[in-house]
Image 1: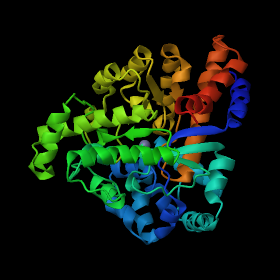
Image 2 (image 1 turned 120 degrees about the horizontal axis):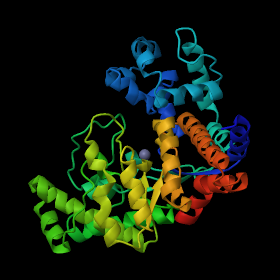
Image 3 (image 1 turned 135 degrees about the horizontal axis):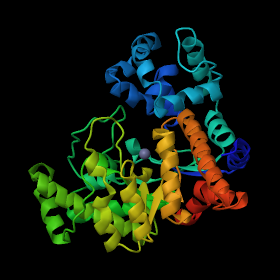
Image 4 (image 1 turned 180 degrees about the horizontal axis):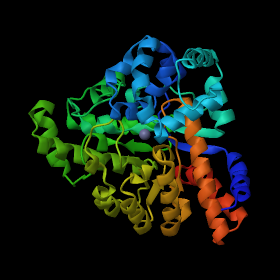
Length: 427
Ligand SMILES: [Zn+2]
């Protein structure tokens, strides 16, 4: 492809004000609660996972003295240096903090660390990075660690209700690594909102309350991310059966009974979200936080829901990577199945470009949106740069082949980064 065409498209794509449909960005206050230094930027982003996969002991990240983190970090940096998660943070440090090298060194880290601390002293730091540098209009925020509180800046974010605690139920204990943030529970949610969870009806009432409170707070969607804990096969279970299982109490259920009750709750949440006019985002594909069961996240598991709920707008996140063929087939088959390639460019620039190319072959482009899926503003910024570059390169290739002209290429880019989300989520 000719470089000038690519750069011309990229320049225009950079002007598009993004509606990022999926982020987890920690509040500035939360970030500042911890001893703030350079390595926290890696720790609070996906780069942490690749260092752990490279062999770094997870607890090494938590050391409060940055010198101690550096002593461990330096041993794994080379192995993790090529992955997109790591490159993404290095790029953010280059663009936002003036890092000149392509890695962290004994010489550069103390000064960078100081710059990070100073940046977070700025009241306008998030606005500067997200609005001025990443050119975001707004971002959807999934704060799974505090579903019961709305601690977001309404200028920058819209809250998405993460329904995991409501599906997983009382007394739920995860078998998988949690990362450093503690997930909220349904007991905590009920306690904060003053709901007693005695009768099954109370529990169902809590679901309705959660959906309506989030909707009133401007939520554009609800999210199901239970592939982190169990399979996405949600069988139909009668209300009487679910009430009977609920009545046995959380400690008394077999694994099979627990799944049945959760299956009922997932269906109930989908029904109530649909009644409230809210689309349902579902995490599909590769799971963050290292060790877990990949097959749980296969989007084929959801097929029955698409047949049962033709009125519901389902958005399958992350192109279900690596189940890309499956997710494209589902989006092609069902008018109400939409895709979000949030996180994909950050997982792999080359996989994202190949996938986008295939997506255009298979699915009408109005069914695609994008989000960053980042935990830190630095990560969100670099993720947005990558997404724009991937789109510019794929679209430039299509223009060269004569599939569309430059004007149409920009229409498609604007649709994916902005207009489709506005339409789909009714913003
Ligand atoms: Zn996410």
